[in-house]
Every structure is written in C-alpha cells, then in structure tokens.
Image 1 (cartoon, helix red, strand yellow):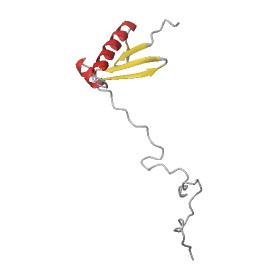
Image 2 (cartoon, rainbow, N blue to C red; image 1 turned 30 degrees about the vertical axis):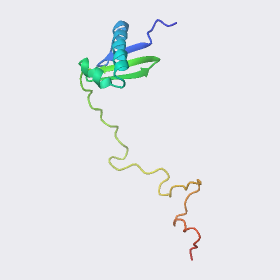
Image 3 (cartoon, helix red, strand yellow; image 1 turned 180 degrees about the vertical axis):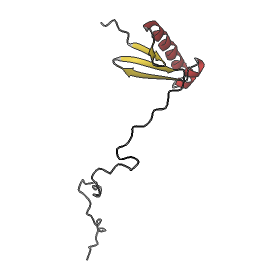
Image 4 (tube, rainbow, N blue to C red; image 1 turned 90 degrees about the horizontal axis):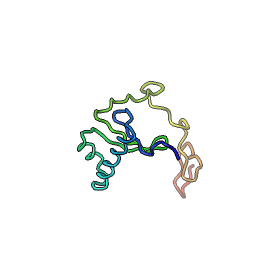
Length: 114
C-alpha cells in the first residue's frame, strides 16, 4: 500500500499537509452530510470564497479558495473574431437516415417537381 493519503486539499493553490487535508475533509464531509449539496455554505461558514471537491492523480482533492480566482482569458480563436466555419462547409446537414439532403431541398411527399 502507498504511503500517500487518498485525501488531499489545497488552499489558494498551495497543498495542505496530510493532517490538515484530512481535518478539512472531515469537516467538509460532516457539513455535507447535514446540508446536502451546500458547498457554498461550508465555504461561507469557514471564511472561504469557494470549496470544490475534485479527483486528481488518484486522490480526492478539496480545492479551497480564500480569494477570487483571477479571471481566465478565453483562448484566442484562429481567424480573429470571425466564427469558425461549420464542419462540412456549405453542404446541407444529413437527414435522419444519414443520407445528405438534396441541394434544392426535398420535395414534399406525394408531390413531384416539374
């Protein structure tokens, strides 16, 4: 068995010791048992901005923030502000049977084009 704990926690990006992480997880779990789904309440009661449980590298990780995280800039899109082209270019989308729709549109059932 590994000497690494299955529970980890970080406070503003800095990892907590195993003992601190275990204590935080115990308090978090107790709160969640009493207040199902109330992560914001746990954060507020403990002076945190947010608390988020996640799973990383084989460990349950409790991510705690005491300050707002800096906003992340969205990744720049190739081609500037133009929307990305649709897959398939200007071809019509396939019909439910998987065959492409005719370019002029399908005639109404029972009617023929002349």
